[in-house]
Image (cartoon, rainbow, N blue to C red):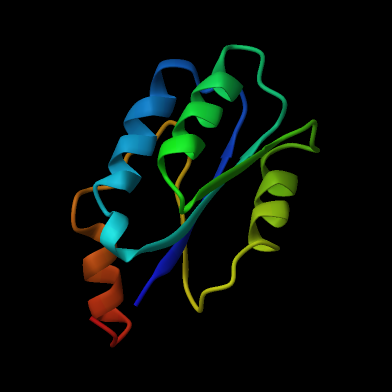
Length: 108
C-alpha cells in the first residue's frame, strides 16, 4: 500500500533537508509527498525545486497561505490515497514508519 505524506512549512531552515531525507528513506511506501510552503524566504523554495527534480513522487506549492491549517487543507486536497501521513517540516519520520503503518492498516 502506498501512502501520501503531507507537510506544511514556512521558513523551515535547517530542518527541511532532514525531513525530506526521512521521507525518502521510506520511499517504497510513498505514493506522493506534498509540501505546502507558505512563501518561505529562507532558501526553502530552492531546496524544494532541487528535490522535486530528483524525486518524481514529490510535489510542492509555494504561495502565501492562512497558516498551518490552511496549508494542510490545501495538501489534503491533493491526497489520492486511502491513507495519509502528516509530517511537519521540523520533524523526521523513522525509517520503516510507513511500512509499519501499511501493515497496521492491513495492507502490509
